[in-house]
Length: 638
Image (tube, rainbow, N blue to C red):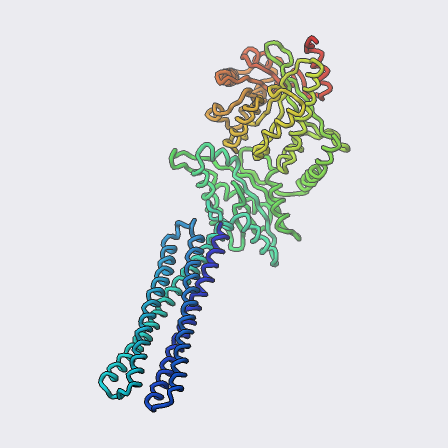
C-alpha cells in the first residue's frame, strides 16, 4: 500500500512539473507575443503616418492577425494541457493519501493549492482574453481614425492612444501577476508533494525497519546491519539470541498491553548499556538478537546475567503485583570467518537446546551442539526418503476401561525404524518435524494407517474401537485441514466417530481463536476430540469450558507423584476434583502414564473412565495390537 501511494505521489509530481513548464513557457510566449504586437503596431502607425502604400499596411495587418490567431491557438492548447495536468495531479494525490488520515492538514493544503491555482488560472485567462479583445478593438479604432485623416495631435487620437498604452501596461502587469500567483501555487503544491513523498518514505522505512512495540530495528533491518558489519574488519564478537521464557503465558494471564510493556521495558534496559558499535534488534515475538563485543565466556555471562537481574521483576500497574520474568539465551562466539546467517542460526540452536530450570538459562554453542545440529540436519534430510521407504511405523497403545478392564480404544504413536540407527525416539525427531513442517505429512500418514486398521476390523466383522491420532499445532494454519482429514477417512469408508483427534493443552495459549474454529469444524464433521496433557501447563478452566472436547487426558505428571505408594490427601483431592469437573462438563476422563497397581486402583475408585500406560501395555505394533484385540473382541454374527 505504501509503495502504491509513493507511485501516485510521483505521478502527481510529474503532472505539476508539466504545469510549471506550461506556465513558464506561457509567460515567455506572452511576453514575446506582447512585444511583437507592440512592434507591429508601431510599424503600422509609422506606415500610416508616412502615407505608405496600402498593400504594405495590409501586409502588416495580416501579419498581426496571424500572430493573434497563433497566440489564441497556443493559449487554448496551453490551457487544456494545464487543466488536464491539474486534474490528474489532484486525483493522483487523492489516491496516494486516501489511507493517510494523519496527514489531513498536508492533504488539504495540497488540494487547496491545486484548486486555487486552477481557479486563478481560469479566471485570469478569461479576464486577459477580454482585455486582449478590448485592446485589439482600440487598436483597430485608432488605426481607422488615423487612416481616415484625423491628425495624431487631435484630442480623440491622443486620448485613445493614451488609453491603449495604459491598457497595454495593465495587461502586461496583470499577466505577470497571474503567472507569478499560479507559479507560486504550483511551487507550493510541488513542495508539499515533496514533503509528502519524504514522509511516505519515512513511514515505509519505519514499517519495514523499526519495530512498533519496542522501537528497535526489525529482523529485516537487523539482517542488513549484520551484513554491513561483516563487510568491515572486526574484533571478536558474540551473537546472542534471547527469548523471554513462556512469554505467551504472560500475555494470556496479564493481557497483551502488559506483554507489550514487558517487551519495551526489556528492550530499554538492555539498550541503555550497549556500546555504540553493538547491534540490538527484536527478531520476532519475544525474541531479541544482539551482536556484542566478546572477551571471554565469563565476562559475557556476567554481562548477560546483569541484564537479566535488572529486568527479572516487573510490577503490573493494575494489580500492583510483581511479575517474574525469566530468559533463555543462546550464545555463538564469532572468532573466525563467520557469516551473519550462520551466527544467528547457531545462537538460536544454542537457545533452543537449552534446558530451562525455572531460572535464567545461558547456553553457549559448542562442539556437542554442533554435532547435535549436524545430526538434526541429517534426520531432516533423510525424512522424506524414510517416509517413502516405509521406515516410519505406527504403534498403538491400548486404552482400558477402569470398570470392565477391557480395551475400549487406542492411541496411535509414530516410531522411526532408521535403516542404520535402528529405532529413533520420537523426542529426537518430532520437535524437528514441527519446526520444518514435515510433521504434517507424518500426521496424515498415521491417520491413513489407522484408517486401514479400522477398515480391516470392519471388513472382518470385528467390532472396532475408537483410535486417537495426534494433531500437531502446525495443522492449525491450514485452512483446508478439515477437508483433507475428512478426505482421508472417507477414502477408507471409516465412520467418523471411530476417529479421535488429540490436541495438546499448550496450543490453547498460542492460537485459541484458530483452534476453536478448527475444533468446531471437526465436531461438525462427526469426529471425537480430546485434549492431551491436561495439567502440564497453565491450564485455563475458563478456556476449557469453551472447547468442544469429548475426552480430557490427564497428564502423566499427575501419576508421577505416587507410584508404589498411596497418593496423599492433596493428590487425591486434585485428581478427584479434576475428574468430577470433567464429568460435569460432559467429558470422559483418561489418565495416561499409569504404571502401578496403586495408581490403577485409585483411578478406578475416583471413577476415571479410561487408563493408558505401562500397567496394561506399552505401545505395540499394529500387528501385535490387532492380534490381542481380535482375541478379546466378539465377532459380529454374519
